[in-house]
Length: 334
Image 1 (tube, helix red, strand yellow):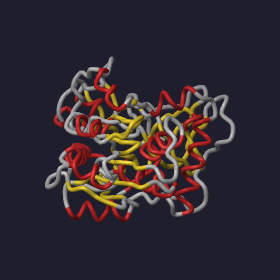
Image 2 (tube, rainbow, N blue to C red):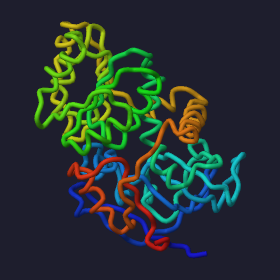
Image 3 (cartoon, one colour):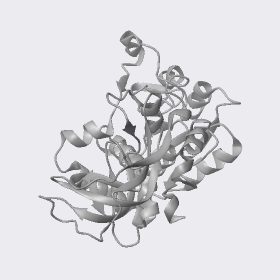
C-alpha cells in the first residue's frame, strides 16, 4: 500500500490562498488509534477559524478537518470494538492531515461504528454539527417543551439541526435567515416563525412573537453581527449560547449588561464538553445516530466537492451561499 497520500495542509495563517492540496506521509495507527480511509469529510466554520488564525495553530505545516467517515483499514494497539473493514464516522481534533485527507488516524474513543441505515455520507454530514447541537440542547443547556428558542442562521448546517432537535422536544422555534428560500428550509426543519434579518428588525419581531417577553434560549453561531440583538431578545433568566464566529468574534463584553434580565451567557465547546464527562461521546453519538435512523434529524447535503476544491468549499461556506452541509470527497473516489 502507498506510503503517501493526498491531503490539505497550510504553512501560515491567512485566506483560502494558503491552502495546499499536496502529498504527505500516510498515517499509521498508534496506541488507541485506528486509521480510516476517508470517503467523506465535513466542512465546518471551525476549519476556517484554524486557517485564518482566529484559532491559531502552534505548529506548521498543519492540516484541517474535524469530522469524517469511511472504512477502518488499520487498528492500533489497545483498541477494542473496532475492526478492519468497519464502516465508521468520527470527530477528531485536526492535526497534520486531519479529515481533509485520503486517510486519517483518529482516537478510537471518537470513532463510531455506523448502524444499519446510516451511510458514510450522512455520518460525515451530521456528526460534528449534530453532536454540537445535541450537546447544547440536552447537556450544557436543557431545552424543554414550550420553551421559546431563537436560532440564528437557521438554514445553515448547525442551525437546521438545532431547529430539528428543539422542535422535536416541543419547543417553539424562531429562526433567522437572509432570504425567502432559506426561510422555507428553516420552516421544514421545525421553525414556527422565520425572521428575514435583511428586511425585518429581529428584536422587534421576536418581542411581537413572544408577547413582549423574549426567548429562553438564543443559539448564536454568527457572532459579532448578531450578539447585541441576541442579548436584547432574551427573556428574564434567558440563555445566550454564543457558539460560533461566522461574522467575526464578538467585541469585548461588559458583564454588567447581563443584569437587566439576569441573563446568562455561555460559550460552549464540543470537545471540552465531551472531555469533561467519560462516556458522553458514546452516549451522545448513539442518541444522534438513532435520531438520524428515526428521521428526526435529517442532514441536508448542499454539495459534495472534490478534496482538491477545498478553497472553493470554504469560500462558499463563508460567503453565505449555501444551506445545509458541505462535504469533501477524495478525488480518487470521484
